[in-house]
Structures are given as C-alpha cells and as structure tokens.
Image 1 (spheres, rainbow, N blue to C red):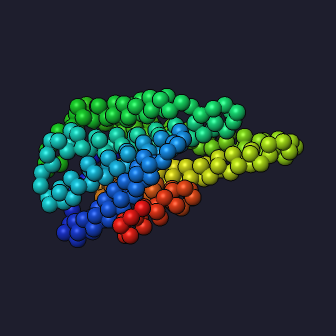
Image 2 (image 1 turned 90 degrees about the vertical axis):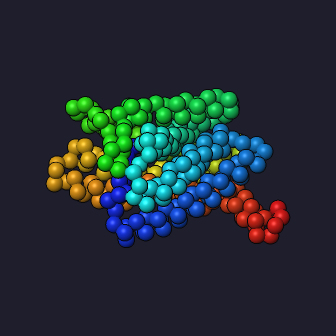
Image 3 (image 1 turned 180 degrees about the vertical axis):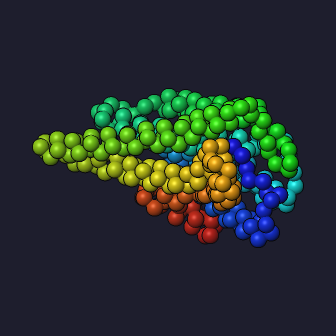
Length: 303
C-alpha cells in the first residue's frame, strides 16, 4: 500500500477524470475534517471518544494536505521526486495505519467501557499516550519500504530481495486489514452480547433505570457511528489492498487486472478520509448541531 500509480502512463481522459476527483475529495476532506477538529477543539468537556475522533480526523487531514496536492502536481507526467518516494508516499500509508489502529482502539475501549460501566473513563493523558504509540507503530511499519524505495523509470521503484516483497505485503495486509478488522468485529460481537445481558438485568431492576437507559442509548449511538465508519473504511481500503496482493502474489495474467484496479483504488482510499465527518454529522446530534452553527456563522458572518 505504499506505492502510487505511475501517472506518466495514464491517458489524457484519465488524467482529467483523476484531476476532478482529486479536487472533489480534497475540498470535501479538508473542509469536513477541519470542521470536525474545530468542533472538538471548541468543546469544553471532551470525552475519550472525542479525543480519539480528533486523532482520526487529524490523520485524515494529514493525508489530504500532504498527499493529494502532490498527486495533482504529478498528474503533469513529471518524474517522481525522491521526497515523494521516500517520505510522502510512506506517510500516506502511515495515515492509513493510524486510522485503522485508532478504530481498533476505539472498538476495544468501547467494549471495556460497557463491561465495566461503573468504572470511570480512562484518564486523558493515558489516551494521549496510546495515540502517540499508535503514530509510532504506524510509521515504524513503513521503515522497510522507506529503505528499499528509490526513484526510477519516472516512478517509485522498490529494490527488494527474493520473496521479501511478498513477505512485506503479507505482513502489511495482516496488520493493516485482517487483524484490526477481526479484532473490531470480535469487540462489537462482545458488545452486542454484553448490551443484551445488561438490558435483561436493567429490566429486572427499576432502580436507576432511567440513567442506565440514557447510558445505553449513548453507547448504542457511538457503536452505530463507529460500526459505520469501520465498514466504510474496510470498503474504501479493500481495492488497494487487493491490488497489491495481485501485484505480489497474482499470476502474470492477473497483473493487468491489478494495474487497472490500482488506478481507481487510490481514489477509493482518499474517499475514506472524506466520509467520516459525514458519518459524525448524520448519526451524532452534537456534531450535526455544531456543523449547522459553524456553517451559519460563515454565511451570516457571526456565531
């Protein structure tokens, strides 16, 4: 997932289509994630979930600001600069790592909160420490590709030893996709079981039923929001994962399929950074209300 499409081989029609899609995703992603960051920054009392969403939006905004503008520049057919191959392209993949690791942490943490409903939230400083660990791990996974990548033939070229590329691709696919999504699915299954048991216990005990019901609705709203985000992430990132699996493990007759898939997969991967703010506003009343307030302030010149 660390390699870009070689723009020197795209057709003129494909170039203009990509340019339009890049512009659309850039505007939507930057505006949406900036709005999320602004809403959370202005919020007086932030929950653990708010801090994690802030990190998720920061990762998506980093991807948009660093990767997309340079990709638009490279549509001109120029040779890839070394900084793109050694820094920007790996950074793009690192943001994907940060996103999926953050989503995994959110799912596991939500399960922990639900099964220990009487315990206080994790202290914010510990959450920030976990976020720092997530960024470090996200970047560390890209060290091998930074070492072996060079510029060549107008694009980025990786100089792997025998079978090293396949091993690295398999490791990335497992750590970026299979293991996190399996962990998230397991956490949500356990959450569903725990919520069902909790409902039975609450029905048999009228004391504090109202407060428990409010807490349950909040949990369900967060679970619904995160579940949708995870599904969209899985769908948006799947094409580029499949493309690189075909590139390393596919037969020669399948290479062209992988190349075609890779040409459209980068757009799908960028879209994942745009959809999260829409999900927040669709499902969460607080975000929807704040979105409307800030949009009105832009057009009405006052808050």
